[in-house]
Image (cartoon, rainbow, N blue to C red; front, side):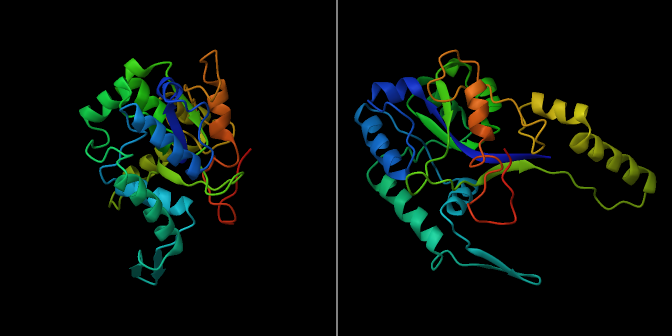
Amino acid sequence: MDSGPMALFYNKEVFDAAGVDRAPATWEEYYQAARKIRAIGKYITSDAGDPGFFDSMVWQAGGQPFSTHRKKVAINLTDDAGTQRWTAYWQRMIDEDLIDTRTVKWSNDWDRGLSDGTIASVLAGGWLPHSLLSDVPQGAGRFRVAQTPTWEPGGTQNSENGGSTLAIMRTTSDEKAAAAYRFMDYATHDSEGIRGRVLDGGLSGRQRHPGQCRVPGPDDPDHTGRRGQRVLRRPEVQPGIVAGRKECAAQP
């Protein structure tokens, strides 16, 4: 129904005040930016233990800690290289007090942190702009969007965070099942149905209806969001794949 390619949404005013003159392109640059932002009494981001965020970042690091065999699911966080790469990096950030680990995401305190700049950025799916507009109206005009930092300069690795799908529950009524299917078809394939979802902040996987960013890209002086939209539509970001995973096809 819609997707959640990861991106970095950052408060440009805070980054500028800390001497971070451009969005970090690598995780090493992100670490250095975090140190500068902490030096002025703010945090580059917050993480009080969000499992969905953890999964997305392990994916972006190339991790594959989950496997299946028939009806069995195995989880191996200890030996998976991508998991270890991400957790070692993030733990270093936590140990150096570069991340706010007390403020829970989506809480009122989190909204206030984004509003006053004490939390300077969010790594989230491309659907975040709608949430920023509704929950952090004081931040209007301050945020920019950039590609998620990568592990190597020039990298294109990314992942998904969120997204939506529809399913029909088992029912004894063929009439209800048929009506539910007609709605699903309308919401996911009909231009008007897709448009309604996009206007409500969704990021469609359909090439003709990608979504409305509403957050400017880096160095976007007119604040229209046009460059931000291009950021979210770049092959590295939409649909948010780890380079080389053949099951996902990047869209232009």
